Length: 243
Image 1: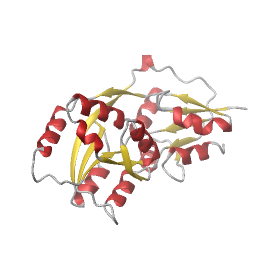
Image 2: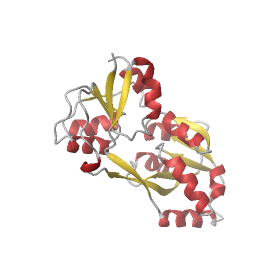
Image 3: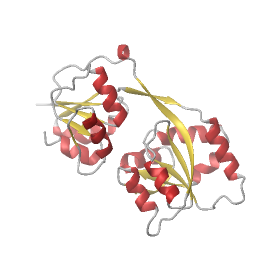
Image 4: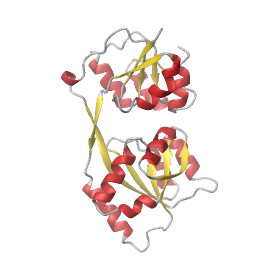
């Protein structure tokens, strides 16, 4: 008997998770409470241009990625704006999903950290990994822990916003068809808008957060979440296959 798991992402973004759980009889039901939009960060690209023309800008340069939504937009905008050369820089990614998206966009991933920004920062500021400058391609509402940790360790971080997520209007997001056997909340903002769309009443089933940050945000909203052993899709899939 199949089980239906609601995930607060678009159908396209749910594809990898669906592949991982298909053999367990699980059907992923997309519930995209946020929708993706490109963002033109003129100031960010200008800062990058100025840095590249600065003779004191470090030669050790990396691309920094914390979301699988960022690589495709980064590559498209960099080429459009005449910054294609930066795409040859090695990339460091938060989690296997972001690393996979980066490779699909043609980037060279040299470091894949765990599914948290602080986890990647720890790798990049210890041992053999001590790059000096990062182009952080991110969303408008990105979390600050990763760039802040790198700056604190003495690195330079240039932030360029390449996308934004906006709430999906209620009329474009029908309420989910029941029954639903579980819900996956994929970010703190998605937890908030999930609850709003459900009129403040979470579905009566187990909930998972993609990681500890989302779990804590959901708890503040009154939603009790489990989290996988590792904040990665593969670990989440293992958990879902046990229900």
